[in-house]
Length: 447
Image 1 (cartoon, rainbow, N blue to C red):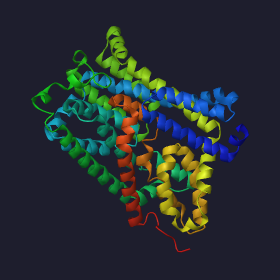
Image 2 (tube, helix red, strand yellow):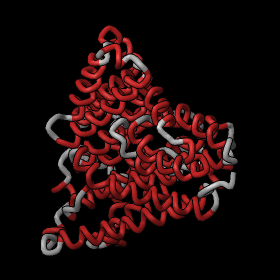
Image 3 (cartoon, one colour):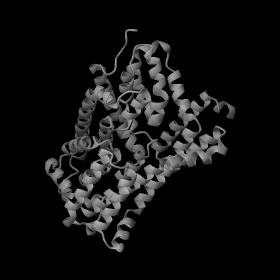
């Protein structure tokens, strides 16, 4: 049995089974994500006869995620401090003026702001800013925060196809194509995807309006913090209204630095946190109070990332990822070669859901592109097809951000996935259709 799992086919089966079991366990809501991130990969590693290698693989996985852990920890702390200081209160007030108490306007506002901010290419920052602005509104209106998370994720996925986003440079590097050329080719798909996100926002808003009919009455005027709980929402004693312009300037400078690549977010966010603490809470006692008030959430995030490091470390170090990519490509019959463009686009949804972007773009895509070349499909067309499944990818349980934002939204990751995945597939299909119509991805080739 163990010898079977040590073959390439066996490793692929083991890898797909591990991801499937992990997803089902998380969605069943019977085990916490942290426990699943640790127990499931360890169990499958033991099943595959990799017991002696578990510790080194886990350490490598955590080490690779260390910069991300630093970034997200200080990013969450920074935006939490800005919430404490009241930076986003005017924005929330303005949005409330525009949206009123209408769930449809609120969801459209969520999608619009997310699409605008996500063009920076930094999904984490986009998520934190959008949550800071809209989470009080959703809680005030008793709207489903899973809707907020879904719209935010879709917007990030669509706008992340920019040349400085995540998937486009990966596809470009894997196939030797200019990232700007890929972006220009998929631009119609990006526009269509943005419109699809707005359509989904309108539909979900109508669903929320119907669900809340008769529930939201005069008590909706209660202060947002009455429904805020913990997490992203600060307390009134920490407000610093006189420093709002200073905090705004600091935040804008941070966002510009992130968008322009002035420095790595691994150092920008710690610097931002230090400045925010010194400016708003100059005394040592007040600084300690602010950090302590967010310690519980920060520890939760860090533990989730450590768990994700163990999971991805075992998945990568065991060779499962490479075997999964090879098996997926080998499963394609030779006669489907003329349609490898749309096939690659469709495959990008499940493959990037079940494996990290790096594994798909640097493992499966080059093999697919080499096969497609025999049928006259260019590397640019294959690269364009490969990035169209990102709305589904951003919901992958392999991404620590899924659990981070679920925690911030105050919802179970399983319920979040059930609500968001069908709409993610819809947005991806709209983008694929637009790419086919525009010619960025050929439906069939002549040869």
